[in-house]
Image 1: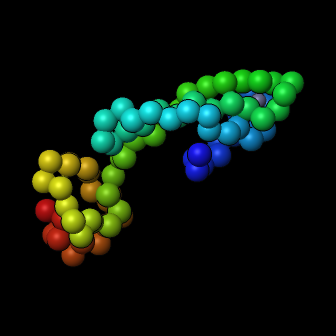
Image 2: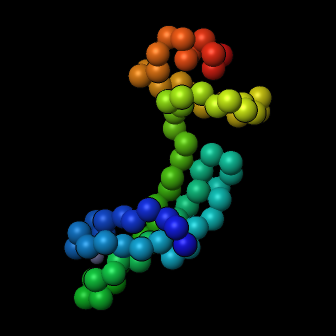
Length: 80
Ligand SMILES: [Zn+2]
């Protein structure tokens, strides 16, 4: 599974993704397991699309994602 690694909040070792499931088009939940055998922490992270930095060239009219404040004014006009 090609998920980004995550740091275990308890022992600060690398944790690996063991399971992921979509929670809709803009969100997913991923279960991580700490690689430190003495720790063994298993935890769930939520990943959510939170804002647009550069607008899509193929926008879906049903998808509404807030625009980042860091977008250039010309990008904001193109995305609206
Ligand atoms: Zn750990």
